[in-house]
Image (cartoon, rainbow, N blue to C red; front, side, top):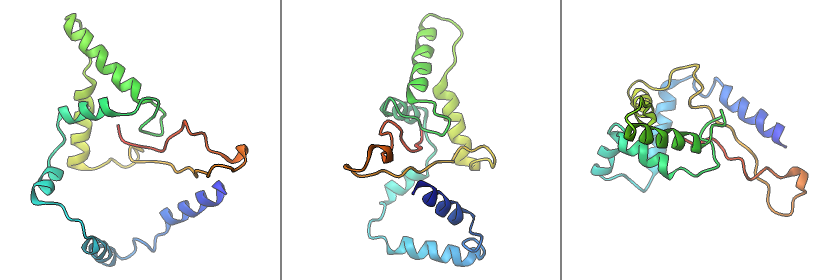
Length: 151
């Protein structure tokens, strides 16, 4: 089952006919967006267009669920949180320090400004089928694993 899903999604992603006509693609996007009933207010639209702030990076880091990883590399949120805690400790002790919030902030600003660089894998993700209760244990997906999210 998982193999069938993988093959399907690989085929969808590599289907060149989807992107063959950019004008038709843009028209379809606009048609879908125009059909949405919920719209952003002008204040919300302005906020979406703003660059992320260091305080928003820190807020997202603190709110991230422990035991989960935002990317395919498997680095869990606790690593980022621990790096930030050590930065605070080092700053208070007046030792050389590494500010992970500033590093992530700079990376996000670069992505917001220039987009994701090809070949970095930054925006890669994966899908896993989730089976309903009652399905044989050999077919269940480990609930401790999560799909890709952003830090």
